[in-house]
Image (cartoon, rainbow, N blue to C red; front, side, top):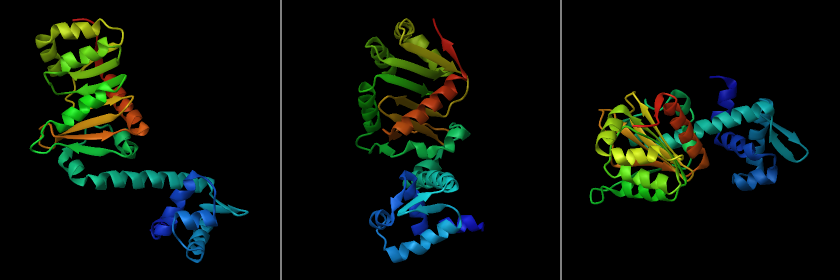
Length: 260
């Protein structure tokens, strides 16, 4: 194994110290208290990181070197990704994640402090209820949907008419159904300056919304069925930005609808 890799991964104390120093220079006392270690137990680990040019000392302060900063930040992203996957292993393993573009999958850690909102048998509409409550507290909304729900046309029309900034990407099949069954509501959205509608001809295998308040994503199972019971939700700013990138990815592959 590469010596640098083994230096980091063969010691939890060294791992923790690298991540701790991302926030800036620290004294040995800071390190001892925050990481709950003794000075005698930590100093040998600091020396090994110094030998690899990952950490350096100036006076009483320990800092990451330029190389150490790059490695620590990449390692931090790796650790956060593992945490997210391990937290909901069954969810990630049972669902199709291929609709998430590769460059965003590599940054899955940006979902941050995400939670899986899952309905119980006696309350099958729980994720949907929480989803609508979070939407109502938002002012800006971006969403992608390959599924149809009968309350959505009127719901999103009312949001737009209240001045909320709404942009939606629908699959061609969903758009045709909405156009046929909810034409008046669709026309009202298109007549508003703050309403945008796009249609994508790809077979999108995820549904999500990102707003100025939260990000929520539902996936398909690997057998092709849509999971109506679980939403992955995060209120972290990084997750909201991640969702905006995901929305723009599909918007760029879509046709804007300006009239019916």
